[in-house]
Image (cartoon, rainbow, N blue to C red):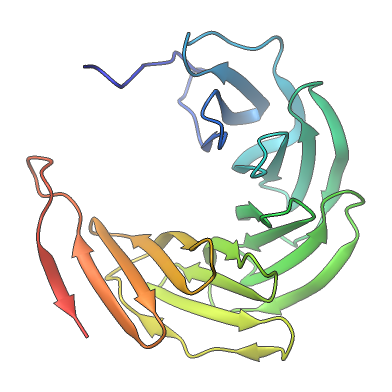
Length: 230
């Protein structure tokens, strides 16, 4: 069974892509546009969402009702997916491009990471700053907030992963499990585990001080074995 579909996007290729948690639509960003696609039919949903600068990051809320976009001028927007209308118009939140975004599980907050080496937290209904900016020491390429909204995890361009406790304002120990940039970070639903994916086809699952690092696919696309365990 073929589970892949090919969509013809804009000339020059697409930048960020996000699939809704419901799995019914995909958002594709490009130069000053976001196109919503029906995943099952491969057709576009009405006209593109118009932005003020190039779109570099996208994320859906967990209920699939809203979409947040991050632009190369440090602004973000939040859209109502059904109406295609902005909930929050372009809001300047970083001094340079926004590289990653994520909603809290309840949809009340948006976390953003940037090439300005900081992350911030914003009210998803008003755009008001709730926390930050918090310096991370290097470019933030991926970000997630825990289900309890008390911790943030960031994946950095140098291969490091950092956690930050929002209650104590404690920056956790930086740990290196990847050989290069960390492109994705995620909390488990109970908040006890952190998953990360990075350069070199590596996926890491961390529980407290312990972790398992796997090379997910070899050159033929089959699952490879565990590479190291502590």
